[in-house]
Length: 119
View 1 (tube, one colour):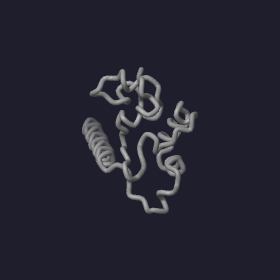
View 2: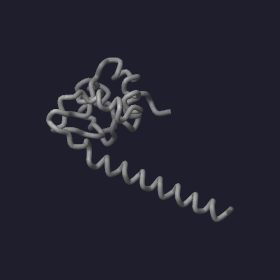
View 3: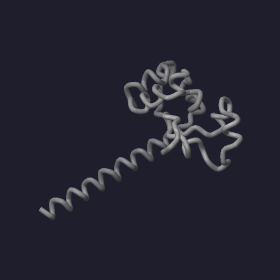
View 4: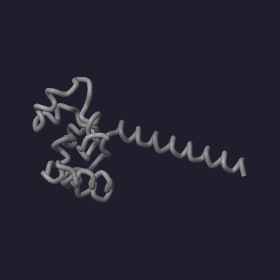
């Protein structure tokens, strides 16, 4: 019984390591390659199916309710940022950006796509 438990723990650890590495690789890559035709589709249309949890967080947030589009924070395919820089926030949130620590980004205080304050 103890041996099975040890193998289970090892399996879960390896699985979590693999998932973590996959997420890091995706973060480094940025957005997957899209055809010119796919680039004409609004981000939300695809993300509603591909990443429904992220889509729902955005949709139910103040940005979603105010119809702030994905490209306004993340950029377009030419200048896409997986984790938007604070400069992208400044066009709408100049006062907040001016008074925020210069070495931090918005996600230090606000969870991505929810835009509430960390608890």
